Length: 245
Image (cartoon, rainbow, N blue to C red; front, side, top):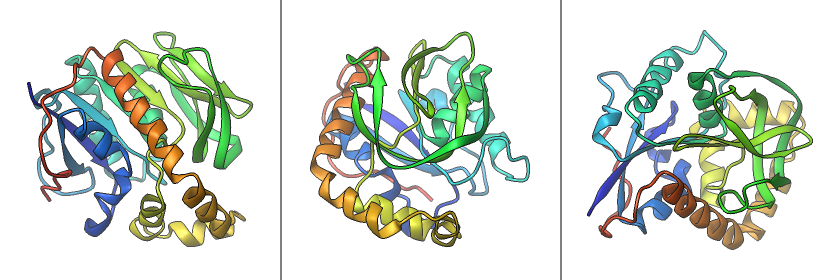
């Protein structure tokens, strides 16, 4: 068989839309799932999640509770349509917070923002392994009663499942190019982080040093998500993620 995954990105400059996926795109593709990229901030109709085998919602510097962000409501409806149609959703950082909100959870500003590789404790190592995962967020989630928390640390929830859906607060996809695309692709990201006292050079050095291990862990996580969602590996197909816009 062959399959397709819809990857949602958030108001990213066109030249960075593939880079922000980091190792997520290759991990899906190595299992035969082509990846279509859609920026939710683009005008025009959005793709229908029912046309895909899975949806992957990536990160954003925005907060899901910020009503001033014009595209959040439409994206929540798109993710809700995926959930209603039993299309498995993998949410990453902002994506996990949006997924939790759609499922009935809540998101708020965290008292412990996290930036860098952080230890995560898992109760489902068959799905999300223990160990250092890259964090880059200032919000935290309270999951709905329909979801099961499967990983956490002192800062809060780090992963949850609900049916075929998986949300992870961390960024398994991190690579040097991915990190660079965040700083250049998201408007104002570099200055905002500098104002928050985040040492970007230190983070970049840590990401480069752990790139190979992080890629292996992301690959493993995607494989486990697909198994959890009941999606067998599709027939391998050539090419990289498609950015139709």
